[in-house]
Each structure stands twice: as structure tokens, then as C-alpha cells.
Image (cartoon, rainbow, N blue to C red; front, top):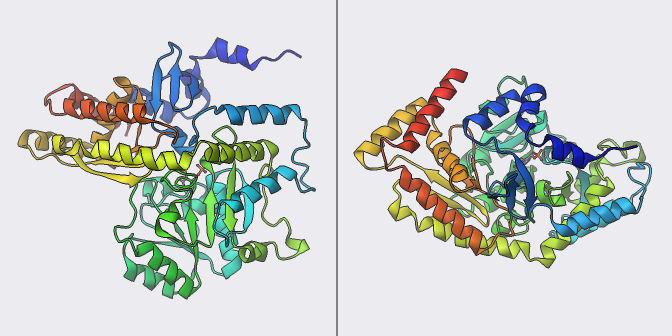
Length: 460
Ligand SMILES: Cc1ncc(COP(=O)(O)O)c(C=O)c1O
């Protein structure tokens, strides 16, 4: 048989957007074309993407946090090659595979001692779905508590705990759930006292906004209240885990002891999907409480060898290359570089984050002329200013970033955790140059904003 994947890649690279327009998500194609993100990337290595002309693009999106150790890490690649050449039995299902046991052991070793049981799955939303079931089965309660502006995935269980109506509307009824505000201890206590909530799901640092409670005692107090009222505390570390915030788990910043933790994204180095739930043994065993119930929660690809091997290799790389330490160090350097821009750029309202999960929030400028421009554009479309910044960052500086969510003037920077001073310097200089252009009104940046408004109105 003669099948050559490289032939497909080499002969058809460039047809990407046509194919997607024809067979996949047309609206996404439209958005990417409107904002000039319709690039054809040909190669990727570490923190960089390369187009067909070999130009480098600094990846500050990091595959939504899936490539913490950098893209196409040689150790993960070699591990996958070795595994394939070994012709291991895979997904026999009615056996206990070695590599899933080894990965569970490696995860438990890196976690607080009470998190001593593991469930392995494929994605973040699947880890959250599993956590919902474990919590409901353990507590016998149905409802879920979560935070406003939360994001835990888009399958219908996880969607029940989503803080945005754009994601929730149009999909019918979801699981019973209730949202509380960060820092609102009274509301949290009121809800927990109803004793109807199985679990309180938190992102210790929220992925959509990069907010964490202003009150340093809010998470510890939330944990205390959860214990008092019999609600499990679930830390969703799908985005914040594995070194993103300068700790292996972000809950370490508050010394929390969650009952359940979810992981995914970077767990297997960005090459194979892999998710995990770490939890107390007694919670795990309540679901699998008899031989009759031994597969009541399961997924076909959940412990597949490719994912297990890639995850074991990724954890090894994280240790060997001191990835968590680098995230803390480079994150501090990025924050201080960006903060140093604040006195010069009135558009910057706040720089926040931990490790290499950094947000830049923009706000109305002071000077009259710019304030007027801001107001006109905000009235047309909230969040437009951040989009106006993201576009030239890619076009002029070849830095890939994202606006964090609908109607938010926030840009998030989440590069692979292996970046160094050279990359930090490039980000800070590009941000400085891009914001400097915004003072020219009328000017190219604001014209571009007007075009975005036009495109958005035409599409409504
Ligand atoms: C905190 C959090 N939980 C869950 C998910 C869902 O993960 P996945 O996209 O792998 O399903 C995400 C994805 O962004 C996330 O940020």
C-alpha cells in the first residue's frame, strides 16, 4: 500500500481555509479572515510557529495552554516513535495496562498525599464531566456551585458551570447549578448552607479573565466552608495546572487541599489528547464501589498507550528542564516589563496574572480626543480595542495572542513555559510599539477598528 501523509501536507498546504470553509466551521473561517489570522503555518518548534516562507511567529496562545513544554518536544516525539516501534498491545480494555498505572503513579507522586487515586481520560471537559459524576455519587447531591465568568469546558455538564451566556444560550436545559462572585463570602456561605451542592468547582485563577480573588483568604475560607457543609472542593487545573502559574498546581498559591483536581491540555505535551482526575481514594471508590459498578464511568481511549507515554515523557521533561521554575521566573519578568509600560500608555488599566498566565486589561484613556474615539468604538462593540491590538501584534510583530473572551478588553498571554528573556523582550517591545500607534486618531489603528465594526454589523 502506498500512502504518504507528507505528500498530502506538501501538495495541499495552503488549501486549509478553503477546505474548512467547505467542510468545517465557516464562521470561524470568516472570523480568521476578518482579523487577518488566516495564516498558513507550516512548521512548529518550541515557542515558535513558522509559515511557508520560514518566518517565525512567537506563539503566545500556546494552543490554549496545551503546549507548556513547547511544540514538538524532541523527547516526546522520540517517546512516541519508540512506543510505536514496540508494537505494544493497546486498549485491550479487559486488562490493566502498564503505562496507565505508571502515569497514575507519576501524577500522584507530584500531588499532595491526599490525592491518591486517579481517573484517566482524554480532554479537559471530559475530566470535568468525570469530576461532576464522582462528586454527585459521593455526596448524593445534584447541584453544582461555580464562579461567575467561569469556564470549565463545553460539553453539557461542564457548560452548566459556564459564566457566559454566549456559550450557554441556545442549548437547552443544563444541570442544576448556581454561580457566586469571587470574594463574596456571604453569598458562598448562603449557597453552601443549603446543602444541595455536590461540589464547588473553581479555577483558582480564571482562564477567561485571569482574575483570582482579591482577598487572599477567599479560597482558604471557601475550602473551610465547603468542608463544613459537605460540598466537595474541585480545583479545575486544566489550564492553570502543570506549571502555567509558576507552581505545578495553581492551588498551591493558596495552600489548598482540594478533594478533586482536573488536569488535561499540556499533560501529554500537546501531541496526544490526555486528561486526568486526581481525587481522594474514598471519593473514587464510592463510584466504583462493587464489581458490578467497576466500569460505570469509563471512556474507550482514556488510558491509551500513546497518551500515557506522551504524558510520562512530558512530566519527565518538566522535571529535567525545570519548566515550573522557568514559568515563575519568566512570568515575573514579563509582568514587570509590561507594568513598566503603564506610565506611558494610558490605555492600560491593569496587568495581572501569575507565572506565564498574564492578562493585559485596557480601559478608557484620559485625553479627550482618545476618550471620544474609545466611546464610539465601545458603543459599537465592547472588546473591540483589545482586538485592535491583537491584530497588529500578529501582522507587524508576528506575535500570536488572543482576546480572552466575548466583550472583554483583555488580552491574554500564555506562551509555552520554556520561553526566555529574548521572547519576553520581543513581547514587551511589540506591545509598546502597538499601543503607541493607538494615539494617532484618526489613524490606521482606528480605521482598522472601524472596518471590524463594519464586518461585525454585516454579519449580524
Ligand atoms: C479551566 C478549564 N477547564 C476545562 C476546559 C476544557 O478543556 P478541553 O478544551 O480540553 O475540553 C478548559 C479549556 O479551555 C479550561 O480552561
